[in-house]
Amino acid sequence: MKQTLQLLTLIFFLASIQLFPQVKAGAEALGTQTYDKYDKPEFCGTSCHTDFYQQWKQAMMSQAYTHHWDEIEYFKLAVPHAEKDEKVAEVKAGCNGCHAPIAFLAGDVPPPKPEMNSRANESVSCDLCHTITGFEGDTPYNFNWISSPGNVKYGPRGTGESPEHEIQKSEFIQTAEFCGTCHNEMSPFGVWVKSTHLEWKEGPYSKEGVPCQKCHMTQAESVSADVGNKYPDVWQHLFHGAHDPGKIRGTIELRIHPDIREAEPLEVIRFTVALFNQKTGHKFPTGSVEDRIVWMHVEAVDAAGKVYHLPVDKKGFEGEEYTIGTDVLAYQDMGIALNDPNFKGVQRDGIPVGDRIFRKPYFDPQGRMTIQQWNTASQGVDYRIGPRETKLETCTFTIPADAAPGIMKVTAVLNYQKLVKPVADFLKVPDEEAEIIRVNDHSTYVTVLP
Ligand code: HEC
Ligand code: HEC
Ligand code: HEC
Ligand code: HEC
Image 1 (tube, rainbow, N blue to C red):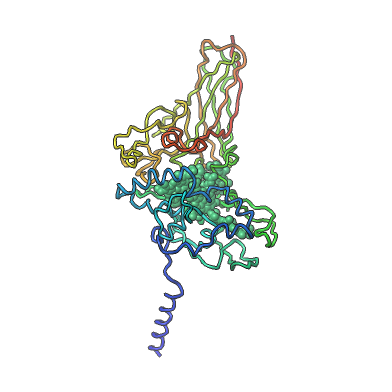
Image 2: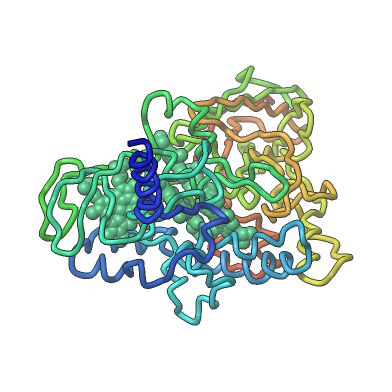
């Protein structure tokens, strides 16, 4: 009897190895699959899911490998750097875990360049997302999703009939953790260099049960497949973010007011600006925080049309110098990949000196500011605007002696740039990546007495 039991246990054990082959996630999954296990997006999208396919095509996740700036950063900076510096060697393959996941799983790294039109170009594809079954560990980050390609596609409902594949309901695909597997990133130095999901988790939206999908895959009455059922709440594959100016606009609301309404030349007026984050579920900016710059510019125009720039008042917190526009140089560590160890760097901000910047600076192992998130050994003050947070800024302004008497209009503008302009210029990244997007503005009026 005991022997039979042992035998049964052994048989069961052996069978379980067969039935549940060890799943690999994150860096361990490199080279564990083949391309042909994943359906091409065109296959999913040209006869059945045409709307989702077209939505996805114009979102950045369909271009995560092919987009110009991604190509430049990966091939010009990350790969050469990884080949020179043992500490960051892992990123040569690792960038692809999120940007070209199927190439990563196929062990095709570095993948052929985008112009070769290989399957790496599929970027974050339908079948990659819809065959993810969970993630490994406690915290989603560094592509630690588990990929189980095959005939079963995981979705939010588990209903519907498909002539092509089986459909199974997945709770996981509906969670913020699903997105967090790629939207949290830890550098080889153990620093959180991308933390969109972690920011969401500590903010108000997670407590209210509003995951990423509610704002980036909004729901509408439609069909989920051309010949499928109609539902009142179908998840649209919009995935709109930093590359959609309409998503950026209005993210922060601005209100500016003076402490007194009338002043003579050489009198002092203090303006206060309230900046309220009413739109994001995470901080603003989030994601590629090393690249992004958000800054407030305040200007006064007197009755004669003369323009005066109002620099922001310093608050005196530690690391504040990184949050005020300056003309110092930074980003010297680009010199490593570019074979120029004495590279002097480029302008840190490329915005008017004295404007307030809402950012978190990233530092290389030498303590210099960097846009290379993989070379980030530490970070400075986190002066971004959290979800539903309001920040107050002041500008103390002495009415100029020659200001024209009459109404003076004072305007606060909040600007956004995806990539710091001097870096974009230096690396020849197309202009659109450094276009200035006006997030919002507000004006107030004071009277200059004669
Ligand atoms: C970044 C991951 C991701 C990609 C890429 C992606 N999807 Fe989805 N898809 C999701 C998520 C997440 C949901 C469910 C959202 C929820 O329940 O909160 C979903 C839902 C769906 C649904 C069910 C919709 C409904 O309301 O019943 C279909 C069908 C679907 N996706 C097909 C596709 C197709 C086809 C593509 C490629 C053109 C694609 N998906 C690309 C993540 C993705
Ligand atoms: C397999 C990895 C992966 C998963 C899973 C994933 N993303 Fe992404 N996502 C990326 C990458 C890589 C980019 C950057 C694309 C680029 O190069 O600009 C990105 C970009 C985005 C953007 C920015 C678009 C823009 O305009 O700049 C949004 C929004 C986004 N993802 C939302 C989501 C949401 C919501 C989910 C979960 C439903 C999700 N992602 C799941 C990898 C992923
Ligand atoms: C309450 C709505 C809301 C929720 C919830 C939300 N977002 Fe966003 N998200 C926004 C808005 C608005 C923007 C545009 C402003 C910005 O770039 O931050 C944005 C921007 C983004 C961007 C682009 C940032 C950049 O600079 O490239 C990414 C990526 C992103 N969200 C991913 C996520 C992920 C992942 C989650 C869940 C963990 C999530 N979002 C939850 C509203 C939301
Ligand atoms: C853990 C997943 C992950 C890894 C690993 C990763 N990325 Fe990303 N990357 C993302 C996500 C998600 C975004 C989008 C964030 C946002 O919208 O702000 C992004 C954005 C970017 C962008 C900005 C895209 C744009 O158009 O603004 C570049 C460039 C980039 N990554 C390059 C790289 C390189 C090079 C590596 C390797 C050194 C790398 N990434 C590693 C997930 C990852």
